[in-house]
Image (cartoon, rainbow, N blue to C red; front, side, top):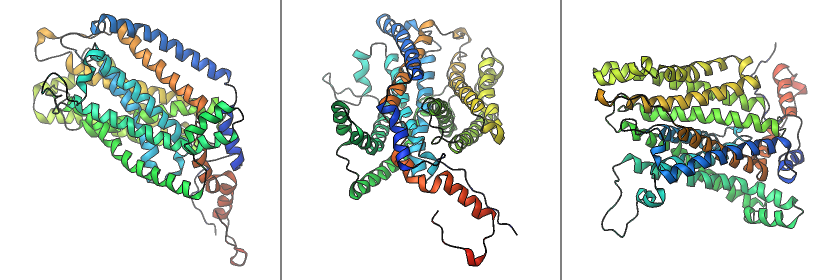
Amino acid sequence: MQIVSKVREPLVTGGKTYKDITEDVCRPVEGNPSMGWFAGMGLSLVLLLAGGAFLGEMLWSGIGRWGLNKTVQWAWDITNFVWWVGIGHAGTLISAVLLLFRQKWRTSINRAAEAMTIFAVICAAIWPVVHMGRPWIGGIWALPLPNTYGSLWVNFNSPLLWDVFAISTYFSVSLVFWFIGLIPDFATIRDRAIKPIPRLIYGALSMGFNGSAKTWMHYEAVSLILAGLSTPLVLSVHTIVSMDFATSVIPGWHTTIFPPYFVAGAIFSGFAMVLTLMLVTRKLYKLEDYITMEHIEMMSLVVTITGSVVGIAYITEFVIAWYSGVEYEQYAFVNRMTGQYWWAYWSMMGCNVISPQVFYFKKLRTSIPFIFFISIVVNIGMWFERFVIIVTSLHRDFLPSSWVYFSPTIYDVMCYVFTFGLFFTLFLAFAKYFPVVNMAEVKSVLKSSDTKVYQSRRTISNEVVPEADRVPVDL
């Protein structure tokens, strides 16, 4: 007789101790940057400066530099806005939702995912601000503030104003949640610091955290409260972004499936970006014992599931258009598939629906190079999704006389490059000066997740121990 039970792979490998975790995570912060870090930061700064030059010239000359016209008044700017907001979705999901559900596999990846959220939202916020043309003049009108010109207020019925509330709330709560999670690790670096300036800086950031039982109790309580506040944001933020489109009467936009469709797509693209960043960070900082195949495999499965949901949404859109009997709606979707932008539509379908299905095969979802490639493909596909939704619904308007073919200008492309430079510059700076893995939370799961306990569980699950020889084992 043999007892067979499924045992999960260990979340911490290499037989690490609590001291090993502290040393491995603090080493990149306390030591000198590696050549890989300098290469990445150099490339990021080149993208930032090159894109910033075009962005600055465009702000000086006006947004007419973009490829906008009377019909396609939204193009790369709003496409990139929605794409970056979606990228930031996985951070809140990993940090808040999985914390409430007590999922231990989040512990090594939540810190970088939270940072990714902050930086992605910053990149997203750039686009609507720049879209104003003269943000230093008109930026104030996007805020719900009284003014000195009379009883003139923003239009609270406009979904564009809802974006202001949604994005600012999302950014604020995510920033607080991220910083609160860093406090115990800041205290560890403070206590290890030798030079006075780092000790002073990390001492201020740690906010007097002393590691006592009472302090830990308050820390965990605040974390749970913030997780509870953050969880509705996973659904609300991208739902509100989708209403920018769904509340209009434009064929291809005027549909009630957009809120859940956008949320699933945001989680889909966000987890793909987490995979991209974590695989690079894992290799660059030699964190293979903390960001294990269990973490990577779980994220790959989330990408597969959300990719399937997005695929169902694509099909549902065609069914709804057919069932509506509205010829304009039907034409909008047929035009997406077979019109001038057919290449964008089928790129979207191939990247978002077909490519993630390969993760059903364990051999492929445990291959690091292949997972990295698919994560890039998914992010490309999600950008095409937003492009297809926006441009193909606008370039064929109700009036054939206004039909155009949208082509981006060099200013469109370089402003997009600027956001990439900004994102990776911020992320690399974070990875150098902040602990990229949450030491406190990894230590909390070490006893139940390391290799030794995993082997003990395998022994107990695969062998029948005689009744007389059984002893209690703390696993």
